[in-house]
Length: 398
View 1: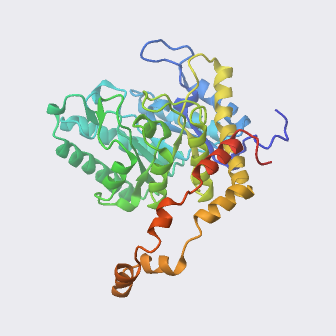
View 2: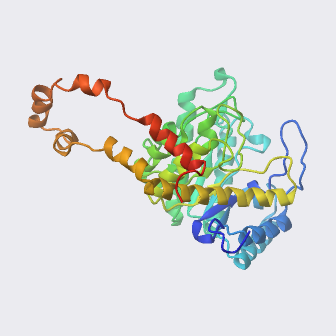
């Protein structure tokens, strides 16, 4: 790859990876690890690799860095070495989160567990993890409720479970306020896996939940490509809903075959058109957040393959960003869009806000005179979609 390659990632692109992504050992439910399990020394080596290939930063769960049962002295030693490695490489930690799903204590949930002592421990663990995130400079704190769900619906009252979930998020908001932490929360939805069903299964459900909290201004969303695709949904639409509501605080980029298990594939490796429209949405609205890749290399890969995976995620985003530029500069595409969006300003002004006069006009004067014409008029979407396909295939644009 030449130094003049315009798709070479640079820190200004704000690409980030989780410690759990490049550190994924390739273990799955049917197979043992194929790569070494991560430790502090391997993490530090990977920080150097990520800096070399142009990443901006790394994100982490608490136990990605500090073992679950580490002593206070061991914790402080690990964090000090990690901070030195960050300083040496120039990488940042924009986001942190808590692992409330791996340890057996969370087998039936953390914030929604029936056992108050489990819920208390989940709060204890999260407060300590928030402290770590703030110490490392994180500005966003993500909550993924991986065990907040059921297989046996008789085991939990879902209304009570959501009440407990709300109480815990409210408690943690107050904890941050009381400690003067300048950090925002981002909730991450997933329909299932590892639970049979997970509460608040989609981005839209999470968005509705936010407005029931005591501090909704502090809490936003962290939508993930794979999680919405597991439910067969259009990810760009979920992101647009979060963006339009001012609640897109973070985002997890990866790839996924529709309605499969959570695959966390290299960004853009599936549904290239969907990935294009996601990049277009983020870039068209100049979204200022991190482009975080929550994915991992195929189980077939060695450590060189993991490097290729990380670089591939970033390069694909930049290539698609270039395709977005070509889309906006393509005269034929833009001519179709101008015609489709020609609008009618006087009419739209009447519809934009209710008044008795506007209602009277729409009810009594705006009638059926051109219904037949508009009902039979073709919109040219076949041509428009084909032009996008040709652009993505490289036979249009420059």
